[in-house]
Image 1 (spheres, rainbow, N blue to C red):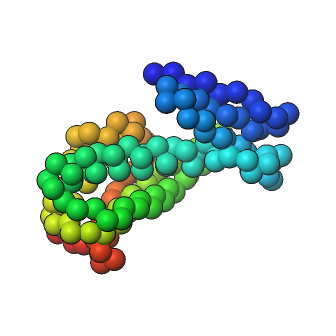
Image 2: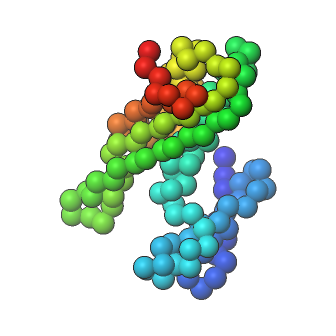
Length: 145
């Protein structure tokens, strides 16, 4: 896999392009000279995890003939500074799956668990350095197995 980042302006705005040929804009915060013309790199990491696991969950639920009317994921990450550096990697990430439709809660939870434990390469990439947890909100109610 390969992606290319092309600088767009004289500051921090880049356009990224991968095999899909769909451009993704990346920029820095205005506080350091960015122009708010794209997502921040650390935001993209969280979006990547969300996209990866969302695709898994949808594929699994479709195979189980579950009817998804709406699907949203909220991902929050806590960052911790590494002493002696300016690095602040994620040390905790929570993925909240919000599904609506005619969906069996146990099937949705199992689909999420399968994604987290067996299929999602993005979560596997960050698991060694960040504690990744997940929750399920089904039809606007917190689902607890």
